[in-house]
Image 1 (cartoon, rainbow, N blue to C red):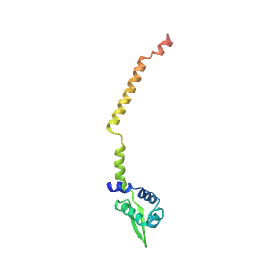
Image 2 (image 1 turned 90 degrees about the vertical axis):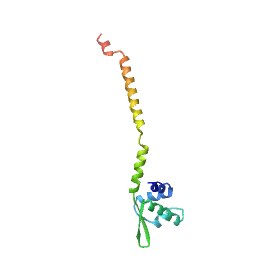
Image 3 (image 1 turned 180 degrees about the vertical axis):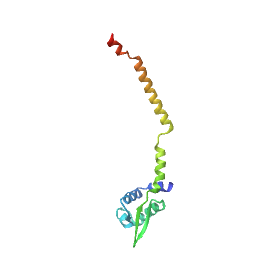
Image 4 (image 1 turned 90 degrees about the horizontal axis):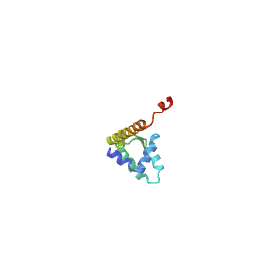
Length: 120
């Protein structure tokens, strides 16, 4: 999970992953979309490959890269756990519900009974 988080920490690598979401691309096609050197793009692709986020295959003289989303699953699970309300939050929500219910019951008990006024 640490390698995946480290790999997606860089904006260029995130852009590469988004490009590969639409389908495999050759390294040259990826590099052409950036204003950085081809060796720099190659280093970014290596980081993504080592993190397991992309796989590469030889196609003649070209390296073709494809997206691999499986490593992101563990990271997504951790992020969901991080953003899930804490146990205290659910207790506070229950307390808030009880406070509103009690207030409503008190107002109802304090209000005059209108049905008895109509029959009198």
